[in-house]
Image (tube, rainbow, N blue to C red; front, side, top):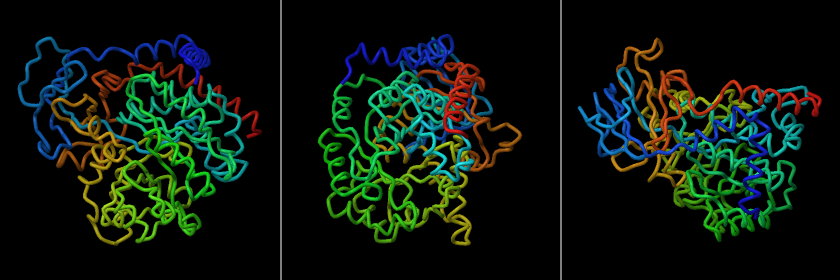
Length: 462
């Protein structure tokens, strides 16, 4: 594993590739101390996502040294930076449970001169340098914060080299955004070849403290040979690392019997997240529910890439833990978790020809508390409660697309969009205020992203 000096050198190199003034300032700001006090005052409502508190009206939220210390009415502002939340709904930061962040530079590459999504991405994935992958992660994180997403699961499935893994992790660690880095494999890796397990072990042994934890994203039985996925499962579990894998994404993949293979070997469980399951059978869902393996769905991308309709109501009925996902902005176009919630809420009704098959409150839970639980982060994310880390967002309820308000939960699931997010705090540190990202040089970031993608496209002949 690289020592501290090498890790610092990698971070410096990634920062230099993004432009010294913009990115180094952004990294320094993102590491700002959470030792301060804030009073989020006069919210129209607080959706705590805590069953014991529910929804509170006309409430304040006091934050001290990174944690929520009080939620109530008329709280003291002594020594606090006051955030005026009148006309706003407060809710926990949204949780994205599966996001290929490295390829955010390739927004819109679902169809190119090379063909559809798979051939288009195959033509460029091998051209990404560590700096390009880190830049893609930074672009995704900025968009996440802008849209109220405060916890991410970075599905790093183009780890071409150790330096690529290190660049992606450092981008996350420096951002101040909460999340998990799921160490993966090169896109071109053969089904008979394991990921770089030697570097994974070394990497796991020397991570810095912070808001980012480690897991692995594996190809699993749908996309790798039995000996390979079994070795990867055993390595991850021996290191105490959670596992995530795409599973039963379409009928062809489901026919391989991957869920049954996992179940037979004890390869399911709360530490193994399954992604998509668009074509999962009732027997698959029963096995997954018994093992309490969480599932991440991404309905926008599942529709666009042709996987089909996610069986959301069947998953819920079976008792499968569910989280929501942007998946990738190559296909989804944007990191809009509000849009994901709305589609998730409506698809089951359309499939069953019946309104209200899945309640809005359930969908909001999947995007917050339930999503956090599915990642094993239920004690630090997804809920607003005294004593917990202060990951919170304010959503304007007095905008042209959100007012008048009948129900705050329905507003969050069906009316709001990222433009309504006016304030974002993660672990007690302000990341967005008055609708402006305060820890990212957006113009500099976008310029560097445009230049990097132009170079990749030129080399790929697109």
